[in-house]
Length: 61
Image (cartoon, rainbow, N blue to C red; front, side):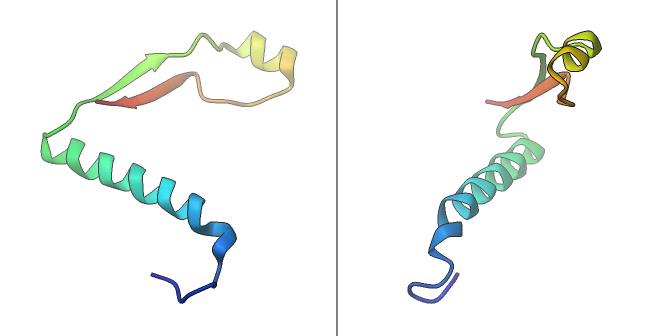
C-alpha cells in the first residue's frame, strides 16, 4: 500500500483498521456474527472517571 520506509509508524494502525474492515465485511455477508455486549460502564461511572466511552462493546465472532 505504501512505498518502502514510508509511514512506517502507521503500519500497525493500518493493519488493525484493515482487520476491523475485514471482520465487518464478513459479518455483513453472514459469515460472522456481530454482538453488542454491555461492558459495565454507565453514565455515573463516566462522570466519576471524567471519560466519555461507549456503553456497549461490539464483538465479532
